[in-house]
Amino acid sequence: MLRVRFCILAAVCAGRPARGQDPVGLRARIEARIAQAPARAVGVYYSDLSRGDSLLVGAHTRFHAASTMKVPVMIQLYRDRDAGRLSLDDSIPVTNVFRSIVDSSTYELTKADDSDSTLYLRVGGKATIRELVELMETVSSNLATNLLIGRVGAPRANATAHALGADSILVLRGVEDGKAYRAGLNNTTTARDLGMLLAAIAEGRAASPAACQEMLGILARQHFNEGIPAGLPVGTRVYHKTGWIGGVVYHDAAIVERPGGRRYVLVVLTGGIQKDEDAYRLASDLSRLVYDSVAK
Image (cartoon, rainbow, N blue to C red; front, side, top):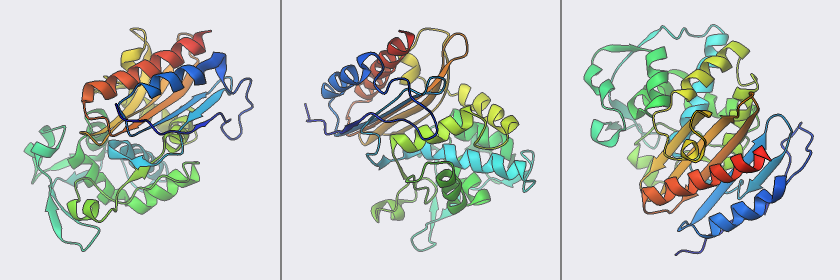
């Protein structure tokens, strides 16, 4: 088993008074579970949106963002809709050829490298922004993501994320830009960054309140539920986005809603876990620990 390197920091999210920074000894239990994980690094961010309790465990550790970078892209699209820059019913030509940020050379996405194959059947046609956002978030379509980044621009999504408090997230490019990956030009994030973005959506601050409700609806329709949701009682409402690169990272970033409407944000980022099942189990176990602690 690899030694897990992580730092532990109990802190309060800016602007929220805390009743307890380490609810019911949660930090010790999270630390013990992470110590058992065959991971290179783990980052955890927890924040109770009602009481203000929060806990950060390696939450400033930087990871390849994988598909979690699709959250700030979605936020930017809805802010642009709010500002009248676009309509979700606008259509975008569907192409699977894109340009590298390194030298503008072209690269091609294929369904073999994507978690969704349906959009490739529409290459040469058009799709609405509404359809593409749904595919980007719920089935993590890389093709939809690249088309939407082309519409809003990665620098603008990055700037908006920073303005919302995710001040170290880095949204540089679309997906499967091999030249950029080899040059180390990757989308990166921390658990805290994603936690700040999800809190902004949950609290109606990421865009207009109506837009935030629409984004929550999309996140609630997530198809990949092996991580945080798997550690929760059946029927618990979860609004979340996963990210995965086999053997490199597995992430799950969620808003969890308990019976009665009380919500908290939980983000689990992992690096270097070779078996998918081990990564899923770690995220679900941490999710259960947090849920049980919040219930006390």
